[in-house]
Amino acid sequence: MGLAERRAVKEFQETRLPAFQQEIDAAAGCPVRLDIDWNRVGVAGQADQFQDDSYWVRVFFRPLAAALRETARDDLGKEAVKVGLKAVAYTYNPDTAPLSNYVGGVSFADGVLTVNFAPGVNAREEDVADLRGRSAAIREVLEANI
Image 1 (cartoon, rainbow, N blue to C red):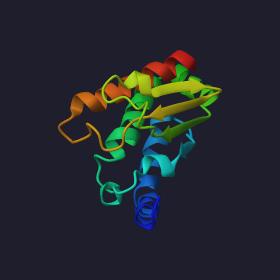
Image 2: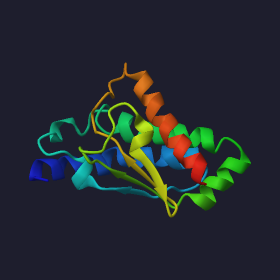
Image 3: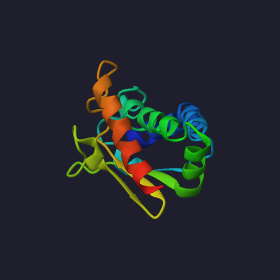
Image 4: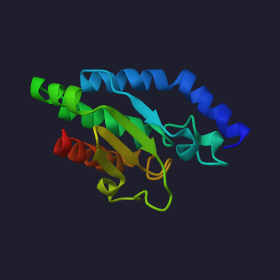
């Protein structure tokens, strides 16, 4: 990751990530630790896109918040999330990240939900089906394991 990417990541971490962390925590009904592999999700040469909602927000953060809202919609779900979910790990592996079959990009082990989606792909505002698909995949894997 070059200097441009590191600067763009730092800006996102300082200006945008806190609001998404709050949204995710509120959706879960408890604090959710986010382990973000910035070196992987911040693709070289794409620093100018990091602040755009279609890069990380609609790929990683909004789908997670939507999935957690559904999963933790009642006391049973909130307790399951609180007890069973230790962290959410975001990564990107271009060889294995799905472009549409999103459940293939989500796994769960030892309390950690790992999300491997391609930043900036199929994440424009009009790509509602992809947002729902990501959210459904996260929810499916999470609910099967907590």
